Image 1 (cartoon, helix red, strand yellow):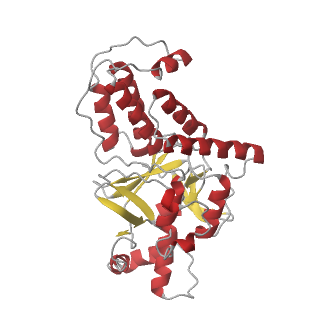
Image 2 (cartoon, helix red, strand yellow):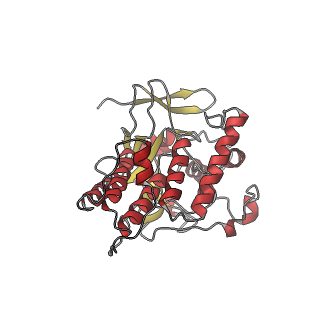
Image 3 (cartoon, helix red, strand yellow):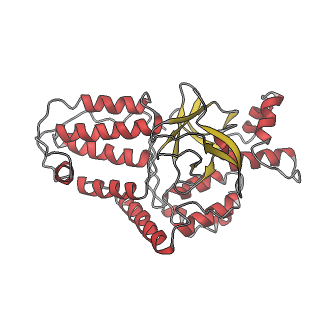
Length: 356
């Protein structure tokens, strides 16, 4: 398969990836094995990353150093820490929490607060899979997010400046002030809904609409559809449950591929819903109103389980703050060092899937 991208110099950004052809939403852009993997040193042996690096051949070691323009003013260990801190990609592996990887190409993808890709770790193949979450035109830059996508403008700028030493001028950050404030308000509403632990289809619909307006395509809307699927099934609405499962499968296919474990499981959920039990209107607003309409409990359904290993987005009012803390593992000796954050970390509720 011909490459869909080229690595080249991008003004004011250094190297990055540019699409060499039009790329459709859900298309696989890159599948790459890491130069090496390592566990977050805050939670494990800090010397592990250096031992993994020393196992590499000289050619791969040179590729590691090309990921960052180190000044040489520090010792070699400090330089490697800097490379890992600014380039390491977190791998959402259900068997190895807090696992990171350095990649020759994937680490070249520059940041955008409105990214057009999503990365998924394939633990079976040992590769990172980069999928397009938006249509990308030939000549357009391929981007990802370094800090999550639930931070408001001022918080994002402060975070990126503190950790990565740059001011973001992506499409979202470059919006006129009025439009940017509208985006901030939607992000605030998303965080408020997530903090309340949405419990009705009407709330889930509102959350999904906000995700769509902010062009958020990752595990968060999938998680919302999981909540809708569970509510419909538990209330005995098999037709609605099937539709929610089909939408969950479609989203999973766009962020981890049609053969991804979660995509397959969502398709199985749709097939397992049984016979139609409700006549739905034709597509359109009337259809959506019925789909997300009020539920009355019709039957009990036992045996509820989550998708094994599905990445769970954290239930916090500022998603990206947790990612910030993880990125700062070489500097976070005390909360005082994180003084630029105006939020009390002790008040942020974190919910993790035990399978992760």
